[in-house]
Structure formats: structure tokens, C-alpha cells
Image (cartoon, rainbow, N blue to C red):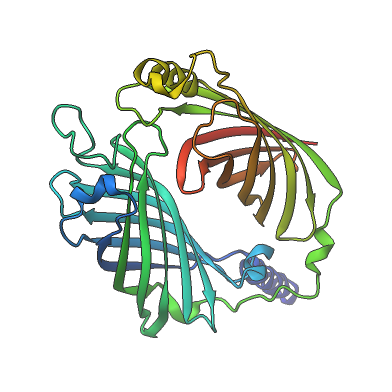
Length: 369
């Protein structure tokens, strides 16, 4: 009997121990009201700025506490999803609805929080050549949208309830998927409440320990990437055309967070081919023959900020072959990539632009050797 009791006791202790080793998934929800003003970054949207837009944020935050190593190395951020509603207070712009993935980063003893979100927005009243030609900001019903906000946060003040106060910018653009694409940027202030579920049982945060970030340094790797998508020149009705980009670069990971890159891009952008032909006929004073080469070659340097298998990519490049002078000789690329199969394969979604003027949203597949 005693042996049987000891067996049951051992199984109970083992069950409790294993249960304590399972990851818990604490989360919170937030609701915020925001109010702001559309910034006149382009004179072509001045007629669309007639009042002060307002809206609502609803957010779900998965709280981290160091179960995975990257959580501790980034001071235990949150990740989650945000829904937004914005009334742009203009008949031609209408209302926008957005769905985002976001990260919350904490500073100053977790009283300062910076949130970055990227997602897709639905425009209720986009440009239409007959019914809404005044909307020069949104050329398509679905838009790429980004927001960044920063401010004071105090969680779990009483019984899981908290508050947050923020200043931020909300951006809508279709990244030249379809003309017109003058976009909007709303500068806003927001205030709201949060609720932390099961706050008394929030797990103790796990420190990173003594394992050095530099231990993740790697040898130089060589990469090849194929990127594609469709886009349109800034001429209404010219049409959407595919593009194909081939990138070749070397990268060197120096620690857990940072990887540096240098390489070459080769662009086959068929919207440029049609833009050249259009301008040769419509603007004979430009001196175009219509036979200018639409292809481009650029060199770039870049950086990746790693979060486990996900990385934020930033690149700055300059064309070395640029026969048709479209936009600027300098270009940049921002986006996300996801590593798979022991970091030998990756997928990426990036925005290629000339400073703040987007050219295309790129969907990429790459091989890292």
C-alpha cells in the first residue's frame, strides 16, 4: 500500500513539474480612441484635408516573459493584432478599416511603449474615374497600411485594468499597385484602457542569462532572391504590369540581433516600358525615342534585425545602370522575411521605394547558402 501511495505521489509531482514547464500564454486587450489631422505631404491631396479625422483602435497583445530567448533579448515585448476604424472626415476619402500585426517595445522601466504595426486597410470610397475622380490618394480599395505610436503606458493599475496615452502616425498607401497613389498620413493623439487577463498569475520574467549575443555570429552566407508582383505608373489608366527582380547578395551575421548585407539587384519592371512609350508620344519635348531600356541594375547595402526566425529588413541602394531616369537614382527597401529549413530558405514581403515614394510591394522567395 505504501509503495502504491509513493507511486501516486511520484506521478502527481511529475505531472505538476511538467505542467510548470509548459509555456503559458498571457494576453491583454486594449481599446483606444484617436483624433488627429491629415498631413499635407503632397499638394495633390490638399482638397482632401477638410476636417480632423477620428477613429478607434482595438488590440490583442500576447505578452512575453522570456520563454523564448528572443523575448528576453528585446526586453519582453508584446506581439499581437490590431483592428482600426478611421473616419477621414472627407466625402471623397470616406472611411477606412484596417487589420494589422504589431509589436510593442518597452523602455524606461516599461512606462514608455513604442508600437509598430503593418497590415492591410479597406477603403470605403477609393478613386473611380467617373464616380470619385477627386480621390487622388487611394487608387485601390485595398491599401497597405502602417502605423507607429509611442507614449505612456501603465498596465494592471487595479484588477488588471490599465491606461495608455499615445502620439502617432497612421499611413495608407497602395504602394503603386494602382494609380493614383498619393496616400495619406494622419498625425494623431490617442487615449485608451487595457485589461490584463489573469493578471495575478502573470509568470515571472525569465532573464537571458550569460549566453552572449556574439555567440550567434556566423560565417558569410550567399543569397539569391526572386521577387515579383504588379504595379502601375503614376498615370491614371495606364494599366498594371508585372515586374521581376533578381537579387544576389552576401550576408554576415555578427550577433543574435544583427546581420549585414551587400549585393546587387537586377530589375525588369514592365510598367516602365509602357511609361516610356506613353511619354514618348504624350510629351515629345522630353526627347524620348520610345526605345530606352526599361531595365535597371543597382547595388545595395542592408541590415536585418532578427527575431528568432523572423527578420526586419532595411536596404539602401543606388542604380549603376539607369538608362531611363525614373524617380531617384537612390532607392530603399523595407520589409519582413521569414526563415525556414534551418535558415536555408526564406520568404519575404518588402516595399521598394525611392525615399518616401513607393514603387512596388514585392513578394520574394530566397535561398541562403
